[in-house]
Length: 556
View 1: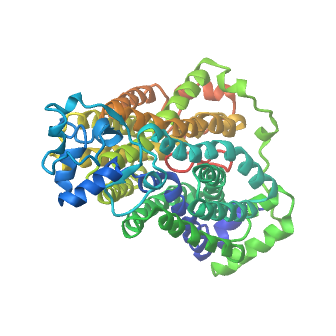
View 2 (view 1 turned 180 degrees about the vertical axis):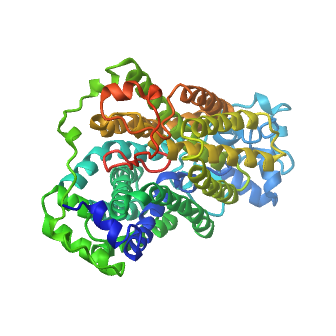
């Protein structure tokens, strides 16, 4: 009896049907980019200072220029750091409506030394030096409330973490297509509601909801396309599906530049996703899932449709289509199996650290560049472009060099680039951007390859469990990364780079402790997994791809 792979070999493993489905589903991948890293533009913090009605009236009466107003009335501008806490969050305790104040250096009539004047937190809000708007400028998320920007982004990753198991269950129980359509609908609605609500708490709740389902939408698309194509195309298709996420990043920079208002930007990236609901008519259910649910008639009908689209004749024995039975699935995996033997225990702990560190590096570099760059649009655009070479490097090296050395080198390059950025003066901004792009490329390579390494180190019956447990550390990292980046920058702007450097270098060294899996058959038992480094390579390597419960979107 033929399997789906047997039939695809005859009707086309990557024919017209698969190409059409691939292009449609890649739009799902691209649409995740604004949700995952949109904080760079939605939560942009411009230069700001306390607003005072008295200062505004005095400035108008005296005819001050902006530079004069800042020099006369804003504390801390004489310090080495013009963006100091004093200039942004404190104001002089002065009655600016006094008639005794002069138009030329008005504070000189009160004291010869400004440092003796009392300071107080901003009382009447802030003035922001930006032509657009962000959640920061609208809700005044600066100074004592700056941590609320971190929480806004953390809610997305908390949603990823909480929603992964739920959406995975829906996809396995009710189908990939239903999961895709349901999560797409909720993602679109929550994105629009995030843009229109008027209070911070409601915005957080809808952001959390969007995180819970948007990753599921991405994973459902990933699973569908990898189950539509033949075994020889799965890995390449999976990598290119993640490249579509990079296309979304590049497009986001352009859209954010054209639309500097955060509410309109949020609507611009959310409203088009409603069109994905049209996939109900263009993307069929996975025949592999249908067979697993004993719905053979529907699976056969879809395979006939694939054959017709590809211009091929279906095989004569198509109606005898069956699903390959995996005996290992009858075993009952447990969390303890991940730590049962010395090598499995070592692999699990190392992989947890690798997932955590790569998520911090990927998201952290994006956030740090967005907060420190001279032009966030160009910096974001150029750094996003560096993700395209990452995919090429992976495709070229994965079967020639292996997995471990490219991952280790990518980690080490990312860590070294971050540490070098500490010593680059601000005047050499181009060099900082170059190093940040190099680090971004390394982090992207790691994110895509660690999935494969993770899956190849575990025996079949705990492979999904191992992926789910280890990759969950990337979601946890995403929850804490905004706080680590933005709060460390308050201490010293380069502080996060030290953290990134340490994570990158240690993760690179730890990667070298893992066995190379290139050319090695996938382990079927715990004993085989324990002896991975001692097993002989096979001429033809087993090909694997991630399943719905274990897929991680880029940067997660």
